Amino acid sequence: MRPNFVLFVVNFLFFLILTACNSAPPPTEVAQNPTVAPTDTPVEITTPTLAPSPLASPAPTRTPTPTLGPPTSTPTRVVKTPTATRRAATATPIGAKATITATLASSPSPTSPPPPPTATPLPTATPLPTITHAEGINPLTGLPVADPAVLKRRPLMVRIGNDVGARPQRGLNLADMVYEEIVEWWTTRFTAIYLSETPELLGPIRSVRLINLQLVPQYGGALAHSGGSDPVRWEVSQSSLTDLDQFYNPDPYHHLPNEGWQTRAVFNAQVARAYMAKKKLEAAVPLQGFLFSETIETGEPGENIYIYYPRSTCFTEWHYDAASGKYQRWIIGSPLTDALDGKQIAASNVIVYFAEHQDTDIVEDSNGATSVRIIVNGKGPAWFFRDGKLNKGFWETDGTRTPYFTLEDGTPYSLKPGNTWVEVVPMYYIIGINSADEASSKPN
Image (cartoon, rainbow, N blue to C red; front, side, top):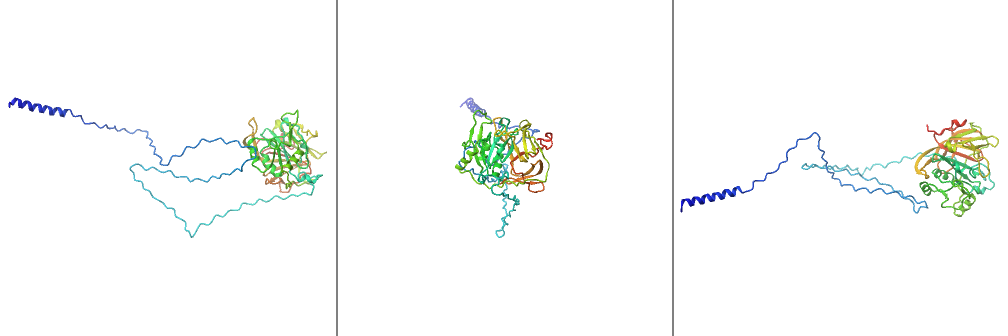
């Protein structure tokens, strides 16, 4: 073989080896993230919560308006049982060893159980004295009645309006008692109580208010009214009082022809008595009434009474008339008369009843006026006017009986035989007894 041919083969093989080595892909470079220098603002790291995520709360639903008819079932009071709160678990950092220490609470010895709690007895309220009357004496007026049978029935407690367009009212002079209270802070309204009399025409009839929920049970009465706001009527429907709402008991009510809306709705007490007997709503209630006396020795001068009810609509005055022995009623500077007899409203007794007044969110009319809750159960100050004299003391009732009246020293107070008007006012009212300028309705 020629030397040149051998050299050629060797060079060719060497060339192939070099070519194969140079054609292999270069090693892949692993990318390295550069180290970032820490900034002045630390980065917040959120630790995952190991407790299960709560379910989304459902959107609140609107509470339905209560049905004003007789309730179909007795509402059930729901008592919420406290739910134990679970402590949230703490996340253990990855790579760290979690040390779990179980702590067992020591159990009380079964042979020495803790003594049961002893209930502390509540203080017992001193019961109010019981008042009794002779047969045939009206417990609300102290006067004899021709027929004692009329006292064996429920008092009718009739809601009568006192806004400017409702005057003059019908039948107020025939009432044994009249309560007057503020409604919606711009006017007043009456609850007239009839036991001995049974008038055929009373009015104008108005709607119920929150005060009647407390006032009516004190007399065991039957409440006559023309409707009311849904929330108040619902409260009435859930109470035990005898309710003669016009919308469910239309028989005793009618509308007078040619009268406006403020005066046309009236109530017939005679029809109401027959209706109540038919519906088995009539009852002889245990009505205690009040103490009475023909004369009174104590007292300071009290011939004039000025009450700062809403001044533009209901500023009230009572002036003692010695000839009749009664206080005569004035409203915004004019005599207030009864449309049935044309006579000025008069009372043997006037009681100013100081009571707590609470604002509510109950809307009473289309103007958005809200109701006032007046507290007439319990005890509060009272000013008693009779025979031109003023005595100061207290009213008190547990809500199941007529109020009991005492002087400031605790001595029982006696009314004058005859009818009584009760003027319910806020605690901060200032009553004028010498002039109208003394009266005020501004909070202290």
